[in-house]
Amino acid sequence: MSVRVRVPTPLRKFTNGADEVAAQGGNVKALVDDLEKTYPGIKDRICDETGKVRRFVNVYVNGDDIRFLQNLETALKEGDNISIVPAIAGGH
Amino acid sequence: MSFVIGLQCRECGQEYPQAPLHVCENCFGPLEIQYDYEGIKKSISREKIASRDRNLWRYRELLPIDGEPRAGLYSGYTPLVRAHRLGDALGVKEFYVKDDSVNHPSFSYKDRVVSVAISKAMEFGFKTVSCASTGNLANSVAAHAAKAGLDCYVFIPDGLEQGKIIGSAIYGPKTVAIKGNYDDVNRLCSEIGDKYGWAFVNVNLRPYYSEGAKTHGFEVVEQLGWKLPQHIVVASAGGTILPKLAKGFKELIKVGLAEDTGCKIYSAQAAGCAPIINALHKGTDLVSPVKPNTIASSIAIGNPAGGYYVIQAVRESGGWGESVTDEEILDGIKLLARTEGIFTEPAGGTEVAVTKKLIEQGRIPRHESIVISITGNGYKTLEAVAKSVERPYTINATLQNFDELFHQLEPNAGVKALAS
Figure (tube, rainbow over the protein chains, first blue to last red):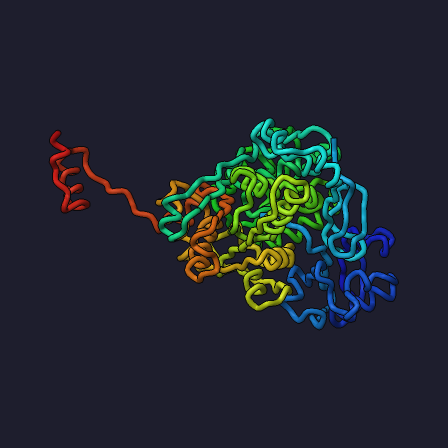
């Protein structure tokens, strides 16, 4: 099962510059582990030492913030679109 | 001359040279401008500032540009209104309204942050400027881009008030309405900024942009005779202005322009979108996102990037925060209009209503100086109040018709004045 992951600029040094990569995983946690296998070092940037998604990282599944879903346990299915986006932005 | 040293991550301390960069590559934390405060202290003085033009660049040593300002030469230095009648209505002694609803050129506090961002974008050599916005920011970016001769794209959620859509379109940007709320717009813009290499004022230029918000606080202090107010109330949306007010006050103390007499800072949110107040009241600094549902569209940000820093700054100052219902917000707008003759948007009504609540709760003492920061203009959001104001009385053009109406309206008034 494969999903597409949008990679933000600060993480592209891990993906050889690719802004989108394919990865596997039944849920977001498994997806992050799979990314780590292919792109060693990337997990540390997404998750803190306790394994939770970092304060300033937002992860979206098909446009929905995983904090509105089941966080790292959010289930994934074939063809889902995942975005990893720095949280620091915005004004109004 | 510039006193900027570079950028530094607020979380992990990693340093970076000046660049259009907004997040730390290590931990995704926000980047802050570092200044040479010793150098600024030697160079700046109250007299020097007083001798300068009345715009936000009068505090230029504390702003992150290298050369001469290129935008916002007429922005900032808005009135600090001594609000006797609103103070009386709220039962407090010393009350002020910092009125950014009349900021130049687009009538909101955003003209401050955009002035700095556009100046910086030009220093970096960008040709296209852009933003994700709930309206006010788009208005400001479009106006400043027109004046600077830059290409401009603005991204807004669909379903915004007409005044805010037309208030951008008139300046000739490409306006893109995204099906979704502000948080959807913001997420998309982060991705577009990466791909297209544009200056997104509130994304990749955010460290520079957000510094402009300090000038709101600088002006309050200067206008109070270089004294900090004892209490200041400001609305929180994405979480830019409140932490920057706190930072600005600290800087004024650090460079010797003001004394550290303490200023408690209070955050105001609409009950229909109060992720920051929820966290503050729960005693946590973990801001859980919410789906916004309020008439206060300009502060309807359910996933505030700077929420954590708002809570930190509020707590550190000894302040607090409250949220109010849409009904209270409308009452707040009317109260400000009918006591001070200032027409603000729902974000401002939120501040008035929250201030009232905090005073009634005893959180803000009645005998100390209080400033509320009015950040936006009511003429842009007429829809929000249209149903809650009186409709005009329609009559025929005869004196008799008016006499009848007047008698209905003022049954106890004599008609003597009419005869004289």
